[in-house]
Image 1 (tube, rainbow, N blue to C red):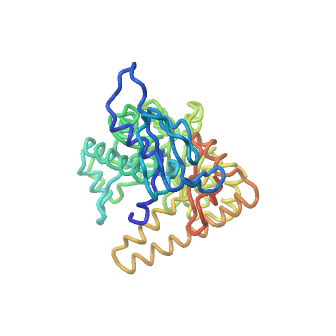
Image 2: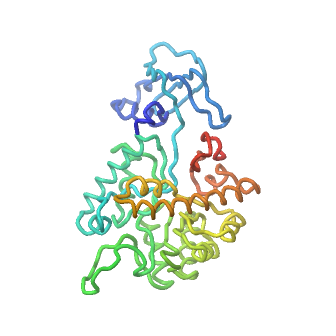
Image 3: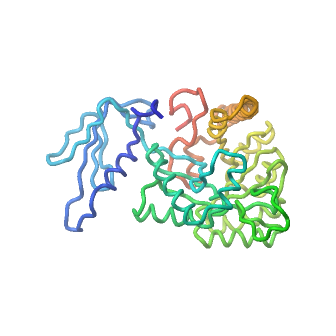
Length: 368
């Protein structure tokens, strides 16, 4: 975190400034703020702008450029030697998930925390995410917290709590027995689950309709775990319901067969895809579907590994994921598939850098 200290998100700063202001009467002029910094990243040109000035009125940026004249009476925020970035987008988050780094930490959170606690933890995670520079997140299911992500999204929109713009997938959908919690006694009834379990086309369609009815911005389901789980027919009805409602569908798919099933059903995005083979990646490209590789979590698992054996195992997974991402990048960008900007528009997200492969250079190298 210390390495990131001199790099500030412009929109994080703006939101913070606006949040601290008292609500003004409609007859009052909007608050005017001018932000100065040493430089600012312009993602359109791929270059840094020296000595930028950002002029803000109310909650809107009205002008940006080097050495702009600051109107009289404007509050000035001087960031000194800092670098300003545009707000970042994280396309794969679980803001409602906060679990201990202990064996069965996920299950302990699921079984011991109330929905109110989960909502408050989500609010804390949302604020931390905003302060880290992310101003929009695509939150791909809430890990067993009901519809608390919808409440958090709406609270942020209303200005009740600080956080990024959220697109939420609510509960997620998984095949019976194919998601957390695993290993529970069959004698225990009404066990909380990390996603909404379904079996059969009828249940899959009902789950999709229920989640859309409760305010989902997109749907998320699990096409596989260690092996494929939901059938193509089950996948297809979920996607059909989402598309009728003008919503996109994110699909957890790690295996080549799971990816193929998801694409056959009409998925809009493949999450993870770490074990994808070349044929699966080429099919993703042909379908114009977005791959969200989530390499960052594997890097974090390596860094937090409790022992050498665990670290070695996670390092192998990380190396495999990076190899997959490198091949996907080659297929997508060298052979002319849609860039990140077009893909984000396809997903219904604001355009900005979605991910940056490790050791690939400055942010503009990702295709934004």
